[in-house]
Image (cartoon, rainbow, N blue to C red):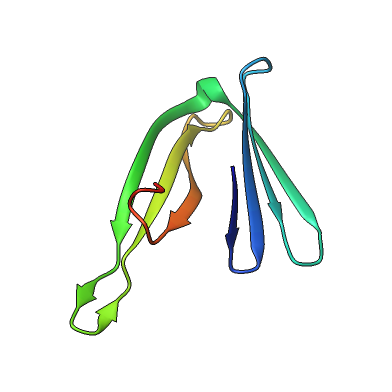
Length: 90
């Protein structure tokens, strides 16, 4: 899956053979940042609605958030994987 947000392209790859989730973020200058997490470390996944729809102000957006357990102190790391204005995409 690839997403374009604020001049960045985020790509998420779930690899079942190596049991990893690779998150790649590429900016406009083609510089890449990689983060690799184990699929077993995923504790929960949530879809959140944020924003408002009052009068002429429409700022509703949906986020897909994955909570991953860290290896050092077993706390949860929050990863925002996707943002969309459509509920069907999330």
